Amino acid sequence: MTNKKYVIYRCVLAGYDYIREDIGNFDWCDRILFTDDAILELKGYKKIIVDSKILGPSITNRSIKIKSHPVLREYKIQIYLDGNVAINQNIYRLAQSFAESKKSIAVFKHPRCENLQDEILEIIHSKKSSLLRVLAELKDITDDDIFSFAASDNSVIMRCFRDPLLEDAMDFWFALVKAYSGRDQLSLPRVIKKYNIAIHRFGIVPRNIFNGVFLVFPHSGEFQKKNFGKFCLALAIYWIWSLRWRKMNLRT
Image (cartoon, rainbow, N blue to C red; front, side, top):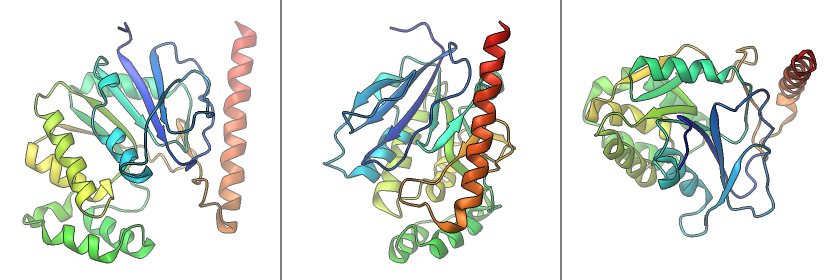
Protein backbone atom coordinates (compact mmCIF):
# COMPACT_ATOMS: atom_id res chain seq x y z
CA MET A 1 0.00 0.00 0.00
CA THR A 2 1.05 3.61 -0.61
CA ASN A 3 0.09 6.89 1.00
CA LYS A 4 0.77 8.79 -2.22
CA LYS A 5 -2.13 10.31 -4.16
CA TYR A 6 -0.30 10.61 -7.48
CA VAL A 7 1.62 8.17 -9.66
CA ILE A 8 3.67 8.92 -12.77
CA TYR A 9 4.22 5.98 -15.07
CA ARG A 10 5.96 5.23 -18.35
CA CYS A 11 6.16 2.22 -20.63
CA VAL A 12 9.30 1.67 -22.71
CA LEU A 13 9.49 -1.52 -24.77
CA ALA A 14 11.93 -2.88 -27.36
CA GLY A 15 14.36 -0.01 -26.77
CA TYR A 16 11.94 2.46 -28.40
CA ASP A 17 12.99 5.42 -26.23
CA TYR A 18 16.02 6.78 -24.45
CA ILE A 19 14.63 8.11 -21.15
CA ARG A 20 16.02 11.17 -19.40
CA GLU A 21 15.83 11.60 -15.64
CA ASP A 22 13.08 13.78 -14.18
CA ILE A 23 14.36 17.15 -12.95
CA GLY A 24 13.26 18.44 -9.54
CA ASN A 25 11.46 17.24 -6.45
CA PHE A 26 9.08 14.31 -6.92
CA ASP A 27 8.46 13.37 -3.29
CA TRP A 28 4.76 14.07 -3.90
CA CYS A 29 4.29 11.00 -6.11
CA ASP A 30 5.39 7.46 -6.85
CA ARG A 31 6.96 6.71 -10.23
CA ILE A 32 6.77 3.43 -12.13
CA LEU A 33 8.55 2.24 -15.27
CA PHE A 34 7.04 -0.67 -17.21
CA THR A 35 9.61 -2.26 -19.50
CA ASP A 36 10.73 -5.51 -21.11
CA ASP A 37 14.39 -4.57 -20.61
CA ALA A 38 15.93 -6.21 -17.55
CA ILE A 39 18.93 -3.86 -17.73
CA LEU A 40 17.09 -0.55 -18.11
CA GLU A 41 16.96 1.59 -14.97
CA LEU A 42 15.56 5.08 -14.36
CA LYS A 43 16.41 7.02 -11.22
CA GLY A 44 13.42 7.43 -8.91
CA TYR A 45 11.30 4.83 -10.73
CA LYS A 46 10.21 1.40 -9.58
CA LYS A 47 10.73 -0.99 -12.48
CA ILE A 48 8.12 -3.58 -13.44
CA ILE A 49 9.08 -6.13 -16.09
CA VAL A 50 6.37 -6.93 -18.65
CA ASP A 51 6.19 -9.46 -21.49
CA SER A 52 5.81 -7.71 -24.86
CA LYS A 53 6.16 -10.82 -27.02
CA ILE A 54 2.53 -11.96 -27.03
CA LEU A 55 0.87 -8.75 -28.28
CA GLY A 56 4.03 -7.11 -29.63
CA PRO A 57 5.71 -3.97 -28.24
CA SER A 58 3.30 -1.44 -29.79
CA ILE A 59 0.02 -2.99 -28.60
CA THR A 60 1.52 -3.93 -25.23
CA ASN A 61 2.52 -0.30 -24.79
CA ARG A 62 -1.00 0.87 -25.65
CA SER A 63 -2.50 -1.63 -23.22
CA ILE A 64 -0.43 -0.30 -20.31
CA LYS A 65 -0.90 3.30 -21.43
CA ILE A 66 -4.69 3.13 -21.77
CA LYS A 67 -5.95 0.49 -19.35
CA SER A 68 -5.50 0.83 -15.61
CA HIS A 69 -2.78 -1.67 -14.69
CA PRO A 70 -3.51 -3.35 -11.30
CA VAL A 71 -0.39 -1.74 -9.82
CA LEU A 72 -1.81 1.72 -10.58
CA ARG A 73 -5.28 1.28 -9.12
CA GLU A 74 -4.36 2.34 -5.58
CA TYR A 75 -3.56 5.87 -6.79
CA LYS A 76 -6.16 8.60 -7.16
CA ILE A 77 -4.39 10.41 -10.00
CA GLN A 78 -2.55 8.46 -12.71
CA ILE A 79 -0.17 10.40 -14.98
CA TYR A 80 1.06 8.67 -18.13
CA LEU A 81 4.16 9.91 -19.99
CA ASP A 82 5.68 8.61 -23.19
CA GLY A 83 9.24 7.43 -22.63
CA ASN A 84 10.71 10.24 -24.72
CA VAL A 85 9.06 13.00 -22.67
CA ALA A 86 11.37 14.72 -20.18
CA ILE A 87 9.71 16.57 -17.29
CA ASN A 88 10.51 18.84 -14.40
CA GLN A 89 8.76 19.35 -11.07
CA ASN A 90 6.34 21.91 -12.56
CA ILE A 91 4.17 18.97 -13.59
CA TYR A 92 2.97 18.94 -9.97
CA ARG A 93 0.94 22.13 -10.40
CA LEU A 94 -0.70 20.62 -13.49
CA ALA A 95 -1.54 17.46 -11.56
CA GLN A 96 -3.06 19.59 -8.80
CA SER A 97 -5.05 21.60 -11.33
CA PHE A 98 -6.44 18.40 -12.83
CA ALA A 99 -7.32 16.98 -9.40
CA GLU A 100 -9.19 20.19 -8.55
CA SER A 101 -11.06 20.15 -11.89
CA LYS A 102 -13.08 17.09 -10.76
CA LYS A 103 -12.77 15.75 -14.33
CA SER A 104 -11.96 12.13 -15.20
CA ILE A 105 -9.31 12.57 -17.88
CA ALA A 106 -6.93 15.35 -18.93
CA VAL A 107 -5.25 15.80 -22.30
CA PHE A 108 -2.93 18.36 -23.82
CA LYS A 109 -3.08 20.52 -26.93
CA HIS A 110 -1.90 19.08 -30.23
CA PRO A 111 0.99 21.02 -31.80
CA ARG A 112 -0.48 21.10 -35.31
CA CYS A 113 -4.00 19.66 -35.49
CA GLU A 114 -7.12 21.53 -34.45
CA ASN A 115 -9.59 18.67 -34.71
CA LEU A 116 -9.95 14.99 -35.51
CA GLN A 117 -10.20 15.70 -39.23
CA ASP A 118 -6.73 17.29 -39.16
CA GLU A 119 -5.44 14.36 -37.11
CA ILE A 120 -6.70 11.83 -39.67
CA LEU A 121 -4.97 13.69 -42.51
CA GLU A 122 -1.73 13.84 -40.52
CA ILE A 123 -1.82 10.11 -39.75
CA ILE A 124 -2.30 9.32 -43.43
CA HIS A 125 0.40 11.78 -44.54
CA SER A 126 2.94 10.56 -41.99
CA LYS A 127 2.14 6.89 -42.73
CA LYS A 128 2.01 6.11 -39.00
CA SER A 129 -0.75 3.63 -39.78
CA SER A 130 -1.79 1.84 -42.93
CA LEU A 131 -4.40 3.58 -45.05
CA LEU A 132 -6.62 0.49 -45.02
CA ARG A 133 -6.67 0.35 -41.20
CA VAL A 134 -7.47 4.06 -40.97
CA LEU A 135 -10.28 3.72 -43.52
CA ALA A 136 -11.69 0.73 -41.65
CA GLU A 137 -11.82 2.80 -38.48
CA LEU A 138 -13.43 5.75 -40.27
CA LYS A 139 -16.05 3.43 -41.74
CA ASP A 140 -17.02 2.45 -38.21
CA ILE A 141 -17.69 6.07 -37.17
CA THR A 142 -21.41 6.87 -37.48
CA ASP A 143 -21.46 10.28 -35.77
CA ASP A 144 -20.15 13.07 -38.02
CA ASP A 145 -19.77 15.40 -35.02
CA ILE A 146 -16.77 13.28 -33.98
CA PHE A 147 -14.67 14.84 -36.77
CA SER A 148 -14.89 18.31 -35.19
CA PHE A 149 -13.73 16.97 -31.81
CA ALA A 150 -10.61 18.83 -30.65
CA ALA A 151 -7.36 16.99 -31.35
CA SER A 152 -5.03 16.11 -28.48
CA ASP A 153 -1.39 15.16 -27.97
CA ASN A 154 -1.60 11.91 -26.03
CA SER A 155 2.09 11.71 -25.12
CA VAL A 156 0.87 12.94 -21.71
CA ILE A 157 -2.43 11.83 -20.17
CA MET A 158 -3.85 12.27 -16.68
CA ARG A 159 -6.73 10.22 -15.32
CA CYS A 160 -8.81 9.97 -12.18
CA PHE A 161 -11.09 6.95 -11.86
CA ARG A 162 -13.81 8.87 -10.00
CA ASP A 163 -16.26 8.04 -12.82
CA PRO A 164 -17.42 4.41 -12.47
CA LEU A 165 -17.67 4.20 -16.28
CA LEU A 166 -14.08 5.28 -16.91
CA GLU A 167 -12.64 1.77 -16.65
CA ASP A 168 -15.17 0.49 -19.21
CA ALA A 169 -14.34 3.49 -21.38
CA MET A 170 -10.61 2.69 -21.24
CA ASP A 171 -11.30 -0.94 -22.16
CA PHE A 172 -13.32 0.25 -25.15
CA TRP A 173 -10.55 2.68 -26.14
CA PHE A 174 -7.94 -0.06 -26.08
CA ALA A 175 -10.22 -2.37 -28.10
CA LEU A 176 -10.52 0.30 -30.81
CA VAL A 177 -6.77 0.91 -30.88
CA LYS A 178 -6.07 -2.81 -31.15
CA ALA A 179 -8.72 -3.47 -33.81
CA TYR A 180 -8.06 -0.53 -36.11
CA SER A 181 -5.34 2.05 -36.79
CA GLY A 182 -3.37 1.68 -33.55
CA ARG A 183 -3.45 5.49 -33.17
CA ASP A 184 -5.05 6.32 -29.83
CA GLN A 185 -5.53 9.99 -30.82
CA LEU A 186 -7.87 8.86 -33.56
CA SER A 187 -10.08 6.70 -31.34
CA LEU A 188 -10.24 8.83 -28.16
CA PRO A 189 -13.04 11.16 -29.38
CA ARG A 190 -15.36 8.19 -29.89
CA VAL A 191 -14.66 7.00 -26.36
CA ILE A 192 -15.29 10.42 -24.81
CA LYS A 193 -18.55 10.80 -26.74
CA LYS A 194 -19.88 7.29 -26.08
CA TYR A 195 -19.24 7.33 -22.32
CA ASN A 196 -19.75 11.08 -21.81
CA ILE A 197 -16.42 11.29 -19.98
CA ALA A 198 -15.66 14.62 -18.31
CA ILE A 199 -12.46 15.88 -19.95
CA HIS A 200 -10.04 18.59 -18.81
CA ARG A 201 -8.06 20.26 -21.60
CA PHE A 202 -4.74 21.89 -20.84
CA GLY A 203 -3.73 24.68 -23.22
CA ILE A 204 -0.09 23.61 -22.95
CA VAL A 205 1.54 22.03 -26.02
CA PRO A 206 4.02 19.41 -24.74
CA ARG A 207 5.94 19.55 -28.03
CA ASN A 208 6.44 23.30 -27.71
CA ILE A 209 10.02 23.45 -26.45
CA PHE A 210 9.36 26.51 -24.29
CA ASN A 211 6.30 25.22 -22.36
CA GLY A 212 8.27 25.05 -19.11
CA VAL A 213 7.19 21.53 -18.08
CA PHE A 214 7.80 19.03 -20.89
CA LEU A 215 10.53 18.36 -23.44
CA VAL A 216 9.69 15.81 -26.14
CA PHE A 217 12.74 14.19 -27.70
CA PRO A 218 12.79 12.04 -30.86
CA HIS A 219 12.18 8.33 -30.38
CA SER A 220 15.28 6.16 -30.67
CA GLY A 221 14.73 5.35 -34.34
CA GLU A 222 13.46 8.75 -35.44
CA PHE A 223 16.55 10.94 -35.20
CA GLN A 224 16.94 12.81 -38.51
CA LYS A 225 19.10 15.69 -39.70
CA LYS A 226 16.05 17.95 -39.96
CA ASN A 227 15.44 17.45 -36.22
CA PHE A 228 19.04 18.15 -35.22
CA GLY A 229 18.57 21.83 -34.36
CA LYS A 230 15.44 21.19 -32.31
CA PHE A 231 17.11 18.23 -30.61
CA CYS A 232 20.12 20.37 -29.59
CA LEU A 233 17.84 23.13 -28.30
CA ALA A 234 15.85 20.63 -26.24
CA LEU A 235 19.08 19.25 -24.77
CA ALA A 236 20.19 22.79 -23.89
CA ILE A 237 16.90 23.52 -22.10
CA TYR A 238 17.11 20.19 -20.27
CA TRP A 239 20.63 21.13 -19.14
CA ILE A 240 19.31 24.53 -17.93
CA TRP A 241 16.56 22.78 -15.95
CA SER A 242 19.15 20.54 -14.33
CA LEU A 243 21.47 23.47 -13.55
CA ARG A 244 18.65 25.48 -11.96
CA TRP A 245 17.66 22.53 -9.79
CA ARG A 246 21.25 22.06 -8.59
CA LYS A 247 21.49 25.75 -7.70
CA MET A 248 18.23 25.55 -5.74
CA ASN A 249 19.59 22.59 -3.79
CA LEU A 250 22.80 24.47 -2.99
CA ARG A 251 20.81 27.38 -1.55
CA THR A 252 18.92 25.09 0.78
